[in-house]
Image 1 (cartoon, one colour):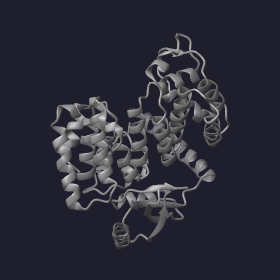
Image 2 (tube, helix red, strand yellow):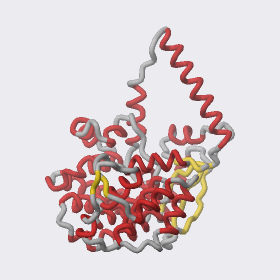
Image 3 (cartoon, helix red, strand yellow):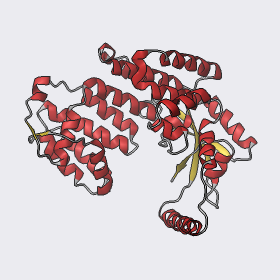
Image 4 (cartoon, helix red, strand yellow):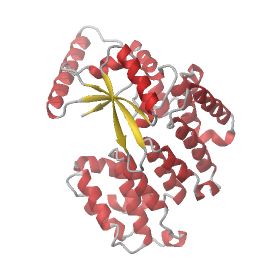
Amino acid sequence: MKKFLSSIAVFIIASGFVFAQSAAVNVIKKALECDTVDESIAYLEKHVIPVEDTCSIRVLYAFTGCIQEQSGLYSDASKSFAKAAGVKVSQEAINSFKLTKEATPQEKIVYNMLKKTPSVLVLDAVRCCLNCGEEKTALSYLNSNIRNSKDAKIQAKIKLYEVWAQLCNDPTDDQIDSIAFFIKGYLSMPEMESVRPSLLFTLWYVTDDDDAAQKIKSQYPKSPEAGVVTGKASLMPTPFWFFVPRKGNAIAKAQNEQAKNITVAKNSNVEVAKKDSAEKKSAVASDSKEEKIKRQQVGLFGKKENADSLVSRLKAKGFKAYIEEEVRPSGNKYFIVIVDENEQGNMGLQLKTAGFDCYPIF
């Protein structure tokens, strides 16, 4: 777990300068020394209250949000980012910290958290809301003072997140067509250039638009979006991307495209490949003993009729699907479509082969 916490710290740290000691530096240092992520989060939440200077309070809330987001605790992360955004800190107070060339990891973290403006922190909160299906809360954040921002990139993100919020609300086929129409309109606007890869990816993912895929690959070949489109990278298993309604099966096509490009080396290289494969299978078998997949989550919906529709399609393909209800802290009720894992442990593969995306539950 300490290795995981260190990786989060590296993710947050940027090269360059840092400022001298502050209350936040000491709290973060001790939080990173905790044995588990849960202990680290608990330590941060406990020690942010006694801190008196507002700079440190904003930093600690923002850093807590970062750890929670990296841990998949999206609802908690959204609240932490929102709290950070609500802490008023003057630019003079931020600039009062003296920058030095020497830096400890925790000092670099504090510096990077301080660079987050309230608008950026609100967008962080919105992103986390969308990742856990809380589109109403996301929209409430977007309708705050953030709309007064004069930053073109902030305004572009607001429009992008509004589109994503609509996708979280179980749109019908006609509504998906309408959303796609808005995306195409945004793609023609110069002020939306900063989020253009995300817009193209959304269009491709939701509508299976081949033209959008080609533009991603040709215009943004090194982007994360291009990696997913070409099958070289996978989406993070967040509810947002896995369960938004869409036409076609763009992800399956990307995986098939990548599979066609894979060639197996001859002679000695074949033996090396076989050895590597055997080692990977052994590692997977070893891991499965520690943590086994119990079920596959195939859908997450705010409307029961959409969940019922998916269950019917799954049953038509021979899968024994059922629905579980979950009420989030916000009061929103969600309907989760589940298929139990089989004895062979390949239910996820069977579902994907049949054209259904799924998310393993351990």
